[in-house]
Amino acid sequence: MAGGAPLPREAAVAVIGAGAMGAGIAQVAAQAGHRVLLFDARTGAADDAARKLAATFESLASKGRMTVDEARAAASRIEPVHTPAACVSARLVVEAIVEDPEVKRGLFDDLERVVAADAILASNTSSLSITALAAGMKHPGRVAGLHFFNPAPLMPLVEIVRGLATDPAVADTLFATAA
Image (cartoon, rainbow, N blue to C red; front, side, top):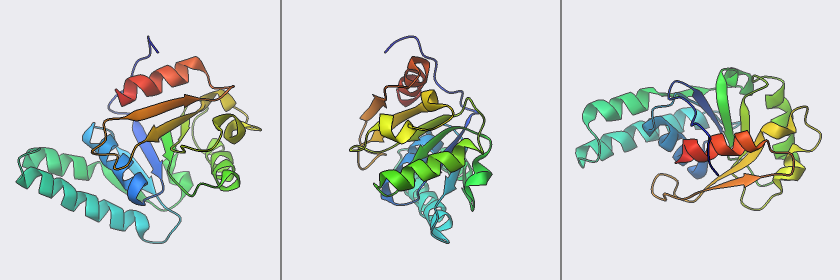
């Protein structure tokens, strides 16, 4: 893919799901300089993940992998939120929730009513059809796969998956942002 510009550093990234994959994706996005809105349907999960990530950043600083200032800045960019509606400012939403197509479609339907029409909706799925996840949406062109390999902060591999309706510019933006 060529020609896409990455999301600007000031663009907020929402991560839905604060388990191992979601927290790892949040870490990667925060370290890249993005404000991260972290949501999980489980009460307290996003807050717990944010605390663990702050400790991870401190550990990375103590090992010399980042400065103390960089660690504090990255931790400060992770904001636990308690409803999907709090992701309204996100330019990119990455879902890392249960591998159930109906649950993922329901989440995308909810998000489509909340985020801007040009916000990218990405799934971390490695097994479900992006075309099927985008089916029935008002703006299916903004849906793509953004599959991080586990553990996301350590694996420098991200798979960009286009569905039949995915706008090529969306895929290009994801490619450039991941790079």
